[in-house]
Image 1 (cartoon, rainbow, N blue to C red):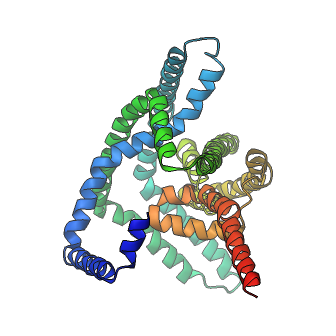
Image 2 (tube, rainbow, N blue to C red):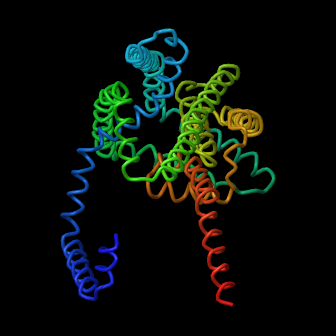
Image 3 (cartoon, rainbow, N blue to C red):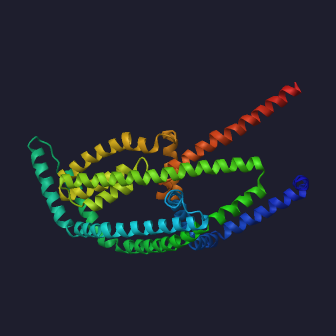
Length: 384
């Protein structure tokens, strides 16, 4: 370390480093497209591996649960862990198959019916607007311009569907590539889970070799806290979205509304997105229903408001317990930044990452700053 410090203090080293950095920066700027293509190709290669690590991370709590409860009486650790992994994989596969069998056909039927009936829905909606315009004209209110704008918007939306088939096709190819990554990632996740203890032991040895005992304990406590925040939030967020989607489906059945599977899935999935998600789900559901009957859309918006009030003031506080403790303004900033950088995944994970940053700030950054301030003040007092 001393030799490195002496080397850094030499002028020729700083000049050489600056020149080398300038050359590297010039090469990067002049070959920006090639570098971008390299990183894109690298991303495509490592995507299944990253996907597998994420799937293994999400499945690991279930493996731990079976290992500590269902198979706790098995003395051999390796056999206990293997059985827990097999049970978890079988449950996940069964859940995916059940979801596809129970939900996908209904979703396909709903989407097909919506597209095929779109022209008749537009005609019904036009008649409804004519009635409203006629009633308003009795009071001297001219709503013809509003009606015309709404009709143009709706018909324009329907007419653009055939023109956007190319985009739909490219999106389907992208979805197919993502599905391939998921399948390969799921297979890799099984291997990651099976060899979890070996990976953890290797990582522990590496950290012990790099860090002092005190730093190692701090590092371990930090990652444990981050893991608790992240896995707890993801688990409860998925559970909350599932509850909201099921309640929405029950109320749609009670009110006799159409497209129950399609709209309930949209509401449940968009509910995973913090802050803005429920509004997006409500807007999409209301748009679909207003094509059938505006009164359906009104009923949907009313009970959606009731669901979100119950969810916001009863379900979420019970699930999350307010333990994340992140200021609202910081959550909004995290959502905007996360969405810009990482898309929907960044929006979903904005709150736990904001909580982790808040934890890092309170537990690591602030103590270091206070310690540094105390040292400076002590040094100043000694000089005086």
